[in-house]
Amino acid sequence: MEEDILLPDSKDLQQAEKENFEVFRLMPRETYDRKLNIQGGGSYYSFTTKSHDYQKIAQIGLEQNNLKVGFAGADYGFIDDLGNISLSNVSKETAEINFLVNYKPPIKLSDVRAEQRKSNNYETENATYKSRIPVSVGHVYALRAVSFDDADVLVAFKVHRKDSDGSLIVFWKLLETFEKPTLIRNEQASSTDNVEYVSAAYAENPAAKIEEALRKKGFNDVKVDISTSPITLRGTVPKGKLAEVVSLVQELNGGKPVKNELTEK
Image 1 (cartoon, rainbow, N blue to C red):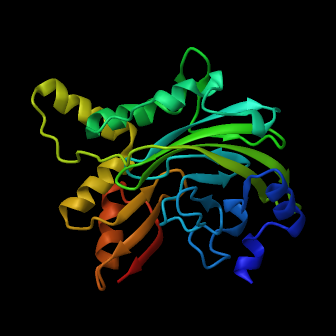
Image 2: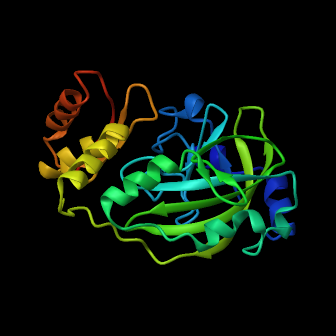
């Protein structure tokens, strides 16, 4: 039943095949999160793994009628609304996505944090890129998703239509697969300025601070999503350690409650 809910209609599948595009359905998170067994309720999708599971390199999400990229940890990305144009005509030569084609992500953690902050409103000569952008049915978008240690892709997609349940039918095509990015997580601060810079990055991205504290405790597979209220914990922890992780995060988060989507293994 869950697979049927996530599957586009037969007409959508036929139309996408006719136009030589791939297609998926994206569910609104505020409606389907926790109503479906799949983590994220079908509100995430990976162009790399072609899965809706948040844990399988999620690269795009839908929430409150906004498309978003970059959800936890060091992962980030850029989205640009190209307008009501033909998806077929979008290529790596399209002027508005020239930046995305040639962009090289940094590998040092402090530099990555700076890019994450800039990705909310990244201005270039030809376009201003966002990490979160309103949905416009019929519009074409370009997206670059940088997932450290997993994938780095550039895609173009079109919001083909919006269904009665708020889900989106998305046609898409891959423009480029880049070399898998590797993050230097344990860089050493070489000066007082660098220490202050890293601290500022943590202040603006509390998820990074929490995840770093968890890694120091040996919990390397926990991702913190601060875009939700309360913040959401996803990933895996060793059996018997769930309560310890939740308690630690609550302490780091000023005693505020957290939403637990962790699994033990």
